[in-house]
Length: 316
Ligand code: GH3
Ligand code: MG
Ligand code: MG
Ligand code: MG
Image (spheres, rainbow, N blue to C red):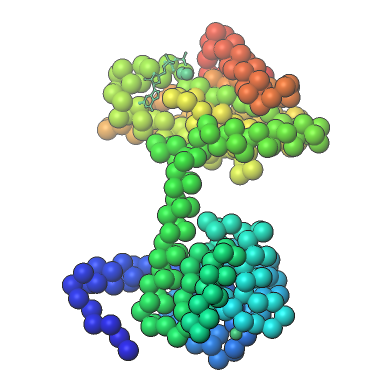
């Protein structure tokens, strides 16, 4: 049975087609004790190019979730041997919150209480069996889109729009954990503040638009010259903060920072027929005083020294 499509649904179909092109990256776990029903769902989902995994009961499902923490959506039946859907959802929610893993409960309507039980246990949505194929696809798509939207909003809240680096909020959230860990382990940890030299002049001479482009290029250059496990954020206007942990924070810190300084100094930012060059000063500390913010203050004082001594240099 197919619902007749009207004009307003054409838009929906177009969106669905665009979506299907991205679905091959999305893992969906199907949990049902009926192998024929699993096969049916698997076929529906592969038509829309989702990657599917299967489990025959709650216990199996928990194991699969553990092995594949990147599963985005779980469809689960209510009545199953060993562990039912309600218990499965409650257990799964101890490790994956509803913005991380979407869960859709599925059961027949003979006992409406089952939908309430599954939702109360932590399901995001419910589909009554038997269902219209179109309702099935709508619910899957909408749940995935809601999760993607939440992910986008969460990421936007901790990212700087201009440079796409993390922002100050992220620095104090994730950085504080890294700082606390390094302090407890007595392992290497460095806080570094990087500030572009005479950046006001770039704006005054070439305008804010070019100033923005310089910031983007400097951010890219720094990202390239830092390690993946380091935390680099845009700290303020033309200031960046970098947290380095492990051995590189102690033994080779000066070399490490010198590399970053050079990467910025060697940068050529295209501007019409010419190229713009900038330099930056770096201040750093490895002294894990009372807090991350106190460390950044010390790094800032070192930066001030680098500035007064002539800029385009590193001070630790
Ligand atoms: P110093 O070497 O002492 O750091 O000199 P400076 O000119 O870099 O420092 P100052 O603090 O006087 O000026 C920083 C400038 O950065 C002023 C501000 O307009 C500019 N700025 C801050 N954020 C942005 C931004 O997002 N885009 C652009 N284009 N400019 C920005
Ligand atoms: Mg069943
Ligand atoms: Mg500054
Ligand atoms: Mg500056």
